[in-house]
Length: 223
Image (cartoon, rainbow, N blue to C red; front, side):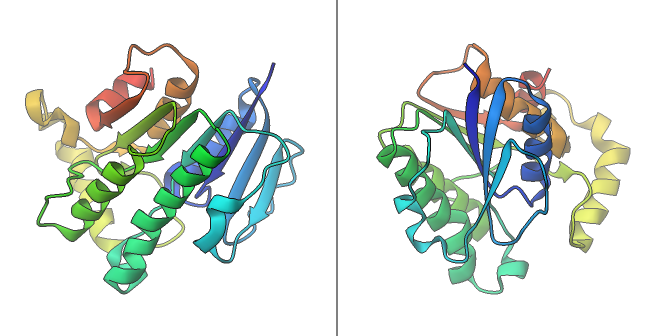
């Protein structure tokens, strides 16, 4: 039988690549996408659900139980403007999505986190990502996979000057990152998306319960 997937954050860099890969994937017959704004995609297997308030997203009822949820939601402190707003997007929404998965008995949850995520970090961004991971693993979900990509390569809808400079630097000097620092090499968003789909569908040898997948491992899983 063909599968049903849910994507939160399909307008972002990874989420957009994920959506189009799932559209082309014959194993999937239905894709529910939750966004704040329309993608205007006229494809029968894609159903858009516009959400203006994610506060009660964990109470959403599906027409059919999905096989897996992909959470690609994330922002930056500059875009969010305040730490409170950033925390809502990068901590509270993923936790609510995990609660949704638990409530609806959805067996697989795949979440984009960040390299360096650590609840004890002095960096607010990485600390928030780490706290999110630790909150989500407490839910009763059969399989949860956290993807921790390094700097993402790809064309965004908005301009991020510092990230753009970093991408240029990584493209030139990325080959120098080997051995233990290999995981810091920049990675294409499409590679992350492909790894997420592979993990959801293949026997990858990963822990079937909870996994924290670093950027260098993402490269391998995308092959």
